[in-house]
Length: 388
Image: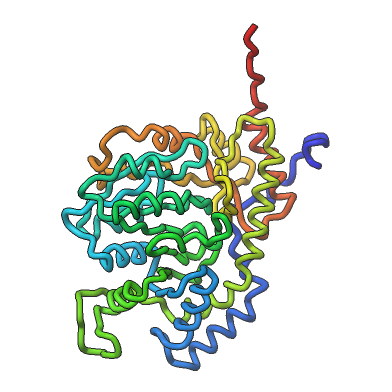
């Protein structure tokens, strides 16, 4: 093990990227090219067999009856809210610790976001946060399965159901993650996914999907994403819709990659375990994975003091990092005033979190190099003082 050996510097010419899509795609090049050729020859670029086949495969993988391909993950949430009839005068509860798209989707419907804080260990929303925020204007709750970890969806869905409030899951970072053996996205009335290229299951462009067990909701979503068209008609429109359709080419690419998802996720879990082992005893705390879950580690997020200094030191040693996310949503100018009180856990975490390199093809040497640089940057954990 590296940590048991004298410290040796690796060559500066060997940077560690934050993600490495080239290494992920290289073994799939021939399959991806065949998918492109198949779509090109079919001349079916919007909808058609490729989209229907992937939707079926994705629904089966997630354990739901329906999957509806849409243009991107933001549209997945926006269209779901609209299909549930949510709009002006309604409030939607969501954690402030999320990508801005979750809140953006709510505002785009005319509803009001109601931001809540998160658990200090997992940085995920909890049942207690949701129940405390519910009121007579609450029309929906959005759970965010952030970093590839799964929030306590069962408990939140049960709490909301007692008030007749639907729960939507933002699972854009949780492709394949499970809670007690059940896939993220399958607990609420709908689960929303992004297939942005860097996701655990990523397209080669934008894409998204909604999964659900509600057949009527699925029909409304298909119509809403396709200009509000009536079923089986081209120029009859039952409702106001928009244009948000998953491209056939992206569906074909996703179908190539889906059989590899579980293996990639297993690699991510192994890498996360190695990081924890290598960083044991340092002043670097990796965000905890909730009990009874199997995360997929879309991001490997740690908390450190003096985060910007640490990132600069790692950058100087050729190691790329990220911050997800440096400003909580309720502190962003477009969403000012949508939190009733300071959300102190999320606010503090935003100044400490750093996302470390994480991708399925990451080598042990790369992991060790990141860990060694991070250990040098943060130092050993200070021993606790015993009371006499």
